[in-house]
Length: 260
Image (cartoon, rainbow, N blue to C red):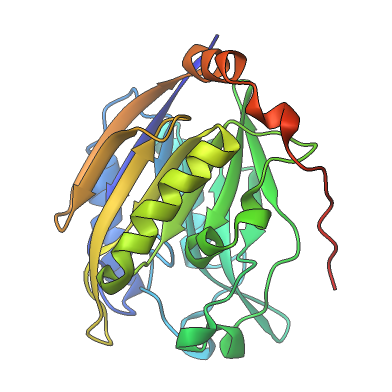
């Protein structure tokens, strides 16, 4: 059985300052050791959680995607996180899964945070993205998606890791931590979740609380309030053992998600 190594970058972000954020993140990524395989950045890592897509968006040929390609190639890593992307007249909170060879996958955030007006500025995604690495399947999701368990539920396309990137405020961090453990338990998978720290441009404080959780809901890593770069190696045999000893998924409901 294989192993897979994740590096979580929990960091403060410069408000709506792409150049400063990319320079800061490049320094952090550049200091990583060679064992890093998948490096995870927060939601909207180049801007913070901005509701100004008209000013902040770029297309897939823009500087931030080019930067991701450069960093993934130079460090021989998979690099992921979300940013503001424009396609035609539509804006997306788009997670990009950038591979070292320059190929990439995309996931557009499905559940838009209406409480902050995200649904008024951005278009929702309609399709999940489950990436494949070394025989592992990774379900890629963004922040508010966490509150909607059907979207994360194991279906006919099973996965091994559920990954979240976020700008989740500290005032609701109890929900964040509780739901991350619930998603791991109910889907019998690892959960890797990266949140930002610090105040954003709206003076909303983020406590981080980035976590790695095993398929039984046990917390393998948790960091609050401080910037941190943490690397952890997950074991496929431990996941297989949990599912073999507790074959709960075979009793699950079978369903299909229908889109509008």
